[in-house]
Length: 118
Image 1: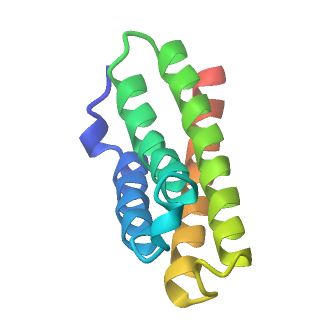
Image 2: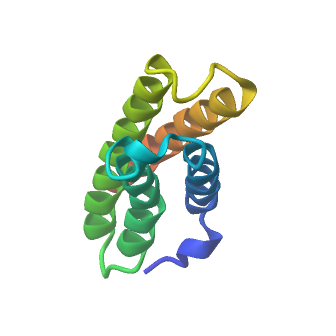
């Protein structure tokens, strides 16, 4: 069992979730039950699955939840790009920073999954 709050990957994933909530707050009201909801659920899923996996009894179980977090990070990346292509997010520094942080979390996640695969 790992203390998820001490994991840098969890801390960065929480930062991404917070930034995603802030950037999606600017979306039109008609997207509330569409892309806004989907983006937020994907963003929250990343640190949530890291935390849940860290609380499991084995590294194998943790690895499985890291895999789910990896899928959610790919979903979020795709949804943010789609929102930008639809004009809901401008190509600005805020989006660029979220995408860079997301790529960093994806790399950290891959490294952890590899570690638990040995």
